[in-house]
Image (cartoon, rainbow, N blue to C red; front, side, top):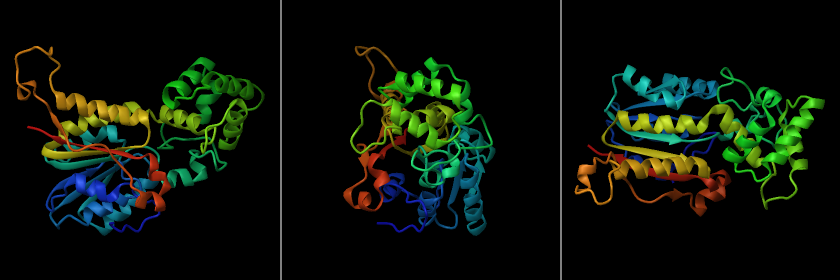
Length: 312
């Protein structure tokens, strides 16, 4: 396996490099830089003429990226959400020249491990959950004013939480007595409100997932990023997406399927497959982490990678 020395173990690293089919002189986009594990591996396969652009909306990730950019002139990073990738690419005059785009969706290990970011129910810290703490409202601010029905809807639709109404009611009743400002408060509240337990899963898992996705508008960001990625890729360029739960994977799977199918015409319409103008070709089946990777990186257990190639 490829060796990468980083505090964050990049998931499906070798599989990602194979999927991108890196060209030595190519242009690549790591749309979710994180701590740069995937980026460093891509750079290792580029010649001095190759280029890699990283994007991230987390200021800490951008700081890491800036250090990498100082050390390696083939790399640059932009502080932005990956739903803004088209604008960044156009500003560099790279449109239709990118040979591969990687999206590693979701929260990173350093974000989870930093109690101050508020992503983890295992560590007590401020209930923030913003990918970019400088933008938008925190989870605590939202929970302080949201209607009970709105909270329940978020937990149900974005966390698939079966006890969404019970938990939402508990949140509203609790905040009337004392503001919910820490991860420990919320985790304990959800624990008490949940009448049953899933094996090997903390009762607050789905609640924290749902609120994080809502606060960061993650699913809509993903939809926008997928569409933009297809617009800026070169013909033959690869789009590689790694997701970590069913809601994200469903969006990716449907996008790939619809773009590989082409125009939505009636089944009996007298046209060939090529005449349907498909924009993507799906490459292989969904890929999951193997036993060897899981033994050193248990967080990879829910990762699913899908790959597609842009058609003319």
